Length: 480
Image (tube, rainbow, N blue to C red):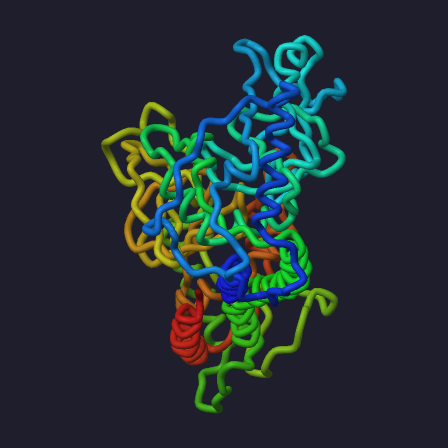
């Protein structure tokens, strides 16, 4: 995203001295370094910190870019002290019960701070053993194991909390805390972190490697000006990022919303032209009725119970005059799935689908299970409908398969199969609303057959499918 690139660019400009003006009135950076040195010597004398090993001189080859004359390249260990956290003893566990002893984990270190949504604690016994491994609100943290290089400050709420062994605390001497956070989060310093991280096994960033990292140090007054400038600029960049994320969501959701809108137009008769040359939809219904009667006479299907008359209150929207509202059960043959016996499911027989696990965007994928004694079969050119956990998903079937209780198979009579595929896809929300069950939702045979659908003449069904195939293919190309 543009905001992320801008953030990196601004931070890099800041640590190169290009974001702020260098003022002659600023104290010399050497004075700051001398003050840090004296403070460290005092703390060593008072036995509050240990004497540090001498850090190597910075060579010309190490310096990545030029900095202002009144700045100086230093090793991080020269201007700070770095101390690791401590793991809890083997066999002990953290608790979410407030014992008064907070324990900061890497999982809590996010967005340059420590979040308080899932606070963990240690008991008093553990605290006594690791009480010297705490972090102050004046320190800066850096993650050093697993997730490497997260930098942040410690809110007052976590002042004095114990620190995980997977992070170190950076103790500051006269340095502006927020400036150091910004500097360590810059791409130049993050690159150093990546380069010195041990990558064998679990990634690890040793304290001595952190101490040896080089950083451009400005005078204290300029550190403050840099922080003020960055606070303002980065707030605007954060706002830009939030807007970019909203736009990304809109772009991601737009194709699906457009698809739903087009499908709605299609089933309302608004996508295609109604032609006087089309056959009467009543003729189509009569042909379907006659085909069903023939199948009943040949004992291929059972006689269906009459479906309830459609009332005016049920009709959700107007449709063209040469269309008709019908119940789905009037114009299709419904075959509810039934699970075979478990001993009949294995590597032999016909392909078995218990539910929608192998559904794709259109044609059902291949299962790795087979059934030697299927109880219910779906044939090619039928529509598969998911009837439980979840309900309403549809796929086309292009082969003979065994279907379990999670599926129903719909045979289209004298109509365009893909029209009904698109229609049922649109009706998913209706099925979801009508579904019942507490453990999982399901729809019954009655719910499916009683579904109210708009039926156009066959010729217009074909025109709708042709139009939808093209439009929906174009919409797929919009997806990012």
